[in-house]
Image (cartoon, rainbow, N blue to C red; front, side, top):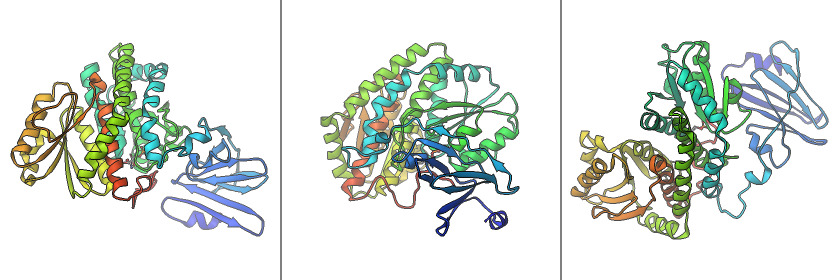
Length: 444
Ligand code: M6R
């Protein structure tokens, strides 16, 4: 196996069963593998949460480790040299029950309803946030990097830091960051944001940033993941295991951290906690039975549509991008998130009678201009769904979301998640397993 693996190219995680001797041989290069230790049984998995029903004692394999796993022993050696490597056991902090659906039909719905508790938990752990805030204050350039949904948390971070901390931070998509990081140096701080901590585009670009001497911080949900181990500073998101392919509670956890970090940088982390408590209250209102029924009613109206446009300005721009991504990945309806100001620069040409437009209109400095965007679409026949703290005559359908000041993005996102979830289930799809997608994107 060693000879064969050493001739292979590309990123691999390989497990071979030796049924004769009752053992497994596993090697990793790039793709994740975790060994689980039981009593008289041992396990291998690509994701630690899969081990939870069996064991919490694990070893996260590093690249070029080769493990021979029998029921009563595990030995690890280096695949290139054959030299033995010590097993480094650690305990998963999650409970097995956290990785079960419980009374919910889907993991995604369970994870959506867990979000108020996730934010409450984060608001009670401000020590680590303040530590990272002190590093941001000292850094000569901070870069938030993420992929997919995590990239929208990174983008939201730039607005939150400008608004709350009067501080410039940079944002990059993980798959692009590697192409423009030549300016990084020893004083740069890269904050890599990821639920799984195994996203290849993030790992690759973060390794390049590390080679240039930048300090790497991982804002990551899976403790022990590749990104977690690679980073110089770790800030666990603390959202618990996320099983649905569509990221929900990890994203809300990222946003809560971004909000607290911005407040901590401004020297007023207590205010950040207060704002997050408003977000929790507002999320609970969005998750109330009455509000959910209202969103189901909207989903019924939209489920047969082919296109949905989602607009917002300021913090509602990443909100629009995330809502559009959630809708397309689990309901397969083409949805496009746009900065509302960009409408007149092209997309307005698409609007005709009946075009669906979701407009995020929170109680902030973007309200008037955002409303103007909604009106432009309405004037051309658009069907306007307003997600806002107050109704307006331009809305054809109104989803109320209580104002939570700088953290209103959090409950607004929850409204978008619920809409995406019900669009998916009303179409008879499985939101936990969207076609063509994987929970951890471990390939380029
Ligand atoms: O594990 P990560 O947070 O690094 O994953 C990043 C993206 O692959 C992920 O957010 C993806 O976009 C989700 N399917 C979105 O729901």
